[in-house]
Structures are given as structure tokens and as C-alpha cells.
Length: 153
Length: 141
Image (cartoon, rainbow over all chains, first blue to last red):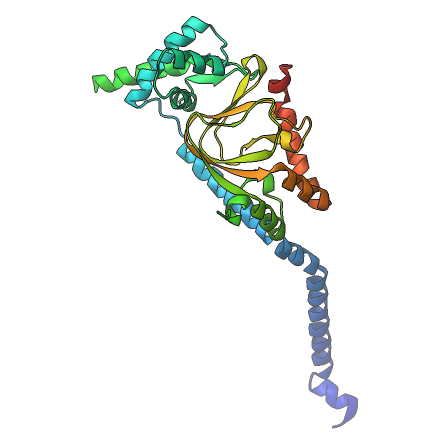
């Protein structure tokens, strides 16, 4: 048996069709891959930026986990909170922070800058958004409540 | 002391810059230790340097006692170095010991003028910060 009969008898047409479809499928996949190369290259070019973004996201996540507020203050901060509250009561609210700093220096308070910083960090002194500051009575109340609860325990 | 490029890269102001641009910026910067109560800028002085907070806490105060405080890594002090009026509009005092990066304003301006892509990336962020802080300077909140 020769020629077309032999091809038919040995599934030649099906094999040819399969071969053609394999080749064309390969070509289609290759062309799709080539058409997307610019995206891969862009990703490669900006790898440093993407890496930094991911790193920042992770850092931000860690930071937010680390800044869960604890109303308990160190003893020295409690003491300076008491002193600064008295000064603020004399000055009135809202008060300018530089004035509080000057006032505390004149009154002979030690480490005025870092004490004010501690109170800012503890959110006992909060900004009014217009350049002046308030004493945060809510946080003060929370601290007192938590102190009472701890003393009961 | 040369500044580590990774430190610069982690700062919000420079987050979109390429490695080469970051290298150039890093070469202009120096690390300065600041102690509690130290003033790094004084209102009315010519704005010669821009400062970027790495650690520590600062209070920046203006006329009539208006002020804001800075506590985060990447916060910037002395933007008048690259923006009008080119003199410090506020006095920045350290509320705690810390470390800042200092960059001469002239050098930064030269770099910005010579590279328009870099200029676009940095100046956009600087103008956002300046407009957010403007009410503290002018008192029009």
C-alpha cells in the first residue's frame, strides 16, 4: 500500500492535524508571551520601587501593631504630667507649645523638652490642628481609671 | 560620614527614585546628631539646609506661638531651602535627642534643576508638604 491510502491506513491525516495544532498552539503561546514582555521588563526596571513598597507596607503593619495604646505611663511622666497640667491650667487652653516650654523652664522644671515630648507621645497634650494645643482630659481620665484598677488587683 | 542609600530609600520623599538618583542624593547628605533643646533652624535665618528626621522628636514654631511637632522618620524640616521665601519661616527645636540627615539647599536645587524627572518627583511631594504646613506659618487655618 502506497500514497494516500497508506497515509489514511496509518492515521496520517489525524497525526498531521495534531502536529499542525501543536505547532500553532505553541506559536500562539509564544506570541502571547512576547506581547507581555514589556510588562515583565517594566516590573524588572521598577523592582527596587516595588520591593520598597512591600517593605514599607510590612513596616507600617508592624508599626501599627506596636503602637497599641497603653494608658499606663512611666512614673516620671506621671509626675511631669501633674506639673505641666498645673502650668496649662494657668495659661488657659488652647495654649501655644513654645509658651509652655518657656513657662516650664522659668518654673525650673528639669528636661522640659523631653517631658513635653513624653506628654505628646502619651497623647496627654494634643494639637488643635491650628497650631495650638489642648490638655487631653479623656486620656488623663483613662490613666486614672487604669491606675485604680491596677491598685485593686 | 556617608549616608547609607537604604536609609534614603526608606524615606517617603524619595520613594519613587531610581537607584542612581538615590545614590546621587545620598552623596549630598550628612548625618547629624541632635541633642534635646538644640535648635537646627531659626526663624528669619537664610535657609541653607534641609533636614530629614531619622530619629527623635522636633517642635517647629512660628509667629504668635503657633507650632507643630514632628515625630516620624522621614519628616522634613527646612523646606524653605527649596521653596519661597528661602529663609526659615520657623524655628525647629529638638524635643529629644535624635539624628537628622542634612542636605545643603544649593546642592539639592542644583540637582533638581539638572534633572527634570527627579525634579518632578521631589517637588510634587515638597509642594504637598508646604501647602499642608502653610496654615501654621500664616495663621490662616
